[in-house]
Structures are given as C-alpha cells and as structure tokens.
Length: 337
Ligand SMILES: [Zn+2]
Image 1 (cartoon, rainbow, N blue to C red):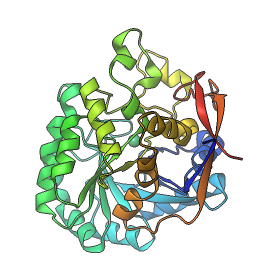
Image 2 (cartoon, protein in one colour; image 1 turned 180 degrees about the vertical axis):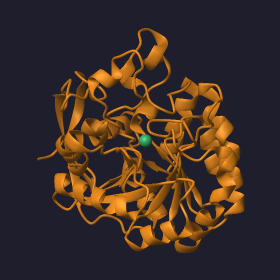
Image 3 (cartoon, rainbow, N blue to C red; image 1 turned 90 degrees about the vertical axis):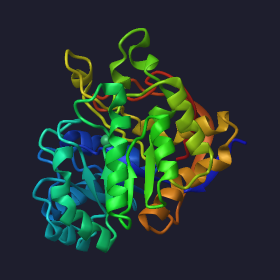
C-alpha cells in the first residue's frame, strides 16, 4: 500500500501564534487539515471577545489559504459574561477555553479554580446555545506529575453542574484522565496529541534534557502513554485528535527558562499514519482525525480528502526559526502534492 486517501482531517487544538510565525507556519496546518481550533492564548493579548476573534480569524485565513477554516475560541476571563459568550457565538466562535490561572503560557491572568463558580452564568449561556467549554486540565500549585489527576475533580463538578454543556478535556496525558473521560457522560470528550502518544518523561529528562519535547501537561509514565494509545485505537468517539502544535523560537526553548510546547504541525498526519500503521490499527485513524471531533463539535464532516504517499523524507531541523518534533528523523509517509 503506497498511497492512502482519507477524509480531510481536523485538528482540534492548534497554536497559530501571530506575526511572522503565523505568516510563515500556518500553511503547515492548512495543507493537512480542513479545520483547526485556534487557541486564544497564543497571541498577546489573548482573544477575549468577538472583537479580538474576528480579526485574528481573518489573519489566519490570509496566511492559510485554499479552503482552510479556522475555528475560533475565546479565553475565559473573570469578565466573560453571558453577553460576551452570546456575542461571540453569534459571530461563529465555537468554544471558550479555560486556563487555570498561571498554569501555562500566557495563563497568568486567568480565572483561579477557586473562583470558577463566578463564571457559572457564562457556562449557563454556553450550555443554552451549544458552545463548548475547553479545559486545560491541570491544577496549579500541585506537583507537576499530579496536576492533571488533581484537576479531574473540577471536571467532574462542571460536568454534574452543567449536564448539557459540552466539555473537552484538552491534551490528556494520564491513564486516570482516560478513565475519567471514558466513564463521564457523553457530554465530555478529550483531545489527544501526537507527542503524548509517542513520548514519556524519559524523552524529556530521562537521559539528557530535551527541551523541544517539553510541553504542558508534561508527558508522563509508560503506562499513561499506553492508556492513551488504547484510547485512540479503541474507536471510542470521546477521544479525538488535537495536536497542540505550539511553535516557539529555538531561543525560547534552548535557554535557562524554556517555554512549554512541541511543534508537531510539520509532521502531524504523516507521523500519525505511521503510528497507527505500526500498531496495526490503520482503520482507526480516519475516525480519530476526521469524524469523532467534528461530530462532538456538531460540525459537518469535511467533504475533501487528504492523500498520503509512502515516500520517506527527513524532517528539516528548522522551520522559520522553530525546531519541529522529530527534527532530522526519517518519516515514512508524506503528504501528496
Ligand atoms: Zn495548547
């Protein structure tokens, strides 16, 4: 089998950045995904209302081209009112993202977990109109390997307080999160990244420090990685693809206080193809990347297709001053011209 054509996939978690990085790197997402959820914290200041979201959407469109559709989100703030939510929804914004205060890049000014109940009017409005709540599921202040586990009680509380609100636990990393999402009602789903399927903490600090594999939530233990692999190959529609591709300039990664984020966009679909093929589960790839997420978001499935060819290539060591995931390594599948 030297050519595979699948339904055009979607990426439900991307950091497009702004300025030069957006201009020079957006095509990498657009060439292999029909739509992508644009994270709101990726520019400074973050996307707070519809008045920020629309110009940002237009900017992404300008640099991505040929039929690509960015799906916009707001970042949840203490002043995210039901009016803000409704205004954004009317303009096509699909979700609101919650970053617990201080938990990751540009999350210093978020809402603390303890004050989340103050945002309940906004969540009620989202529940009413069918807007999704996306969660960066880590509890600030907890030991880093346990932050996701500690956050699951927040997820459970939101799920029971808003039984009609669709919630996505983003980039899950642990067996505990897989289990929680699996057992919670159908209103709760999760995205899983490529790098969390492939890496453990050994690939970050096991031997030498590998700053380009450092992300939040940090990759975890082998048994956690195995649980994620099981989730994506089980064919359960609660688990779908979100790359969390997050380009940072090399100097922001290779320094005394490096940023969190793995830049997987250049290799995402080719490497996923290889990953699923190696596991003998190629038939599970298509729904994971092009069906389950769209259905959970209430979007039509993409009409177009994506073709990959078996044609090994070496991943460049740099794209616009950013080092990609698997830099210098050989990847078996390539996106067809
Ligand atoms: Zn992210």
